[in-house]
Length: 484
Image 1 (cartoon, rainbow, N blue to C red):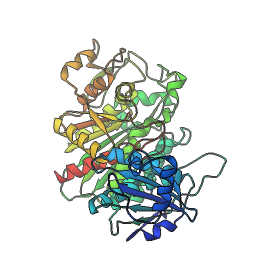
Image 2 (image 1 turned 45 degrees about the vertical axis):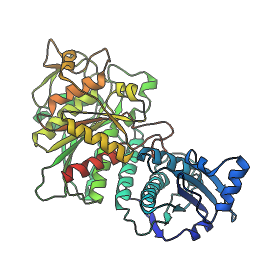
Image 3 (image 1 turned 90 degrees about the horizontal axis):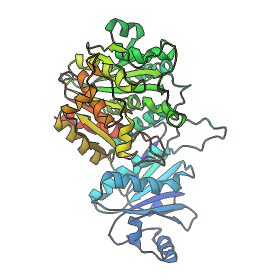
Image 4 (image 1 turned 30 degrees about the vertical axis):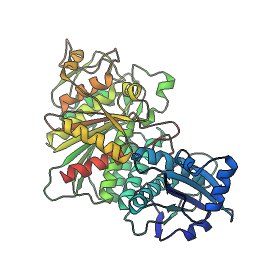
């Protein structure tokens, strides 16, 4: 998704900022108020409310300027992590963007390092919240933000922030699409269009191809939809001459009923989100492409639906995955690990340098962390720790979980090589990772369980319930892997 028409203009100083219709002022926490236009109006509001300037570090303050313009003031502490900055900026931008301005002014004040960091964070937050996502309401949506005028930080290269914003918006746009507008066939058509526009090589492994490959785990899930539109889609990006490829794998379940183990209505609601892992991967790929990142990427999207039908797979079936592993089906609502098993096995055959999968995989991860962080597990400790560090740097926080081998005992099967899951639900996020680890061979592998894919009221820089979590995280991981 391109930020069509959205421009950023940098300017020196802050004098002109006071005459704008919509202004965000970002100050350094603990520093005296600078002598800038609008200060008198701010001080008047603070006095009326019986507050001091240091209160701006706790909550932003909206101030009407003398010419009738709306300004919002906040202070950010240098020592605070990226997540805290993003949260405060999202809340500060809310009253400004609610008026659907075509242009937004951002003025940053402080030393050089602070202004650079604050400008980047503020512009990113403005972009991800000011763009217009699809809506199916009869009322016409308000106009999208078209221009950000930046004061106090001239000459910044904001290509990275723009690329991550585009990736985040693509992820959210796809994830929000209703299930009747994004079934597997429609999704594949959309991916083809993206590949053509971005210049990615594309290969689609449809049901017939996957049958020849004996991808029994994926096909077991696909059987229930009644359509032959499921596929594993492979996209390739070449940004380096000789570097070993990195593999990204995404769960793309366009709707998840739970199958024969049917979900109750409250848990089936929003299950069109279950393709979010694949949307995250597409967002990362788009951002890497826009930045011409010096890496080679192989992207694998496991696109299917988990429906209830006479053909749908059932408990106690034994199916054979692409790598020859036999699987006892224990619960049909554990379909994500089934489609990922074959997609990971396909990616592992290419012997990538690193493999990372993204999936809205387990309810137990949501129980463990809630919706404000996601969990990571993997077969290399250094890779897991890189993910934690990337989460801190980007504001997309992740928690590392251990996955010791003794957990495999819970997945012992009397009739197959492995159980798909248990019926207990205990530590299912760890058991799911242990299950998936059987399909990655010896490739360094990281699993991201996206419990923060949806967060009511917004998360970090993003105001919508669908967060796009994982795009900034994934790009930061690719940066580190490329540098290594």
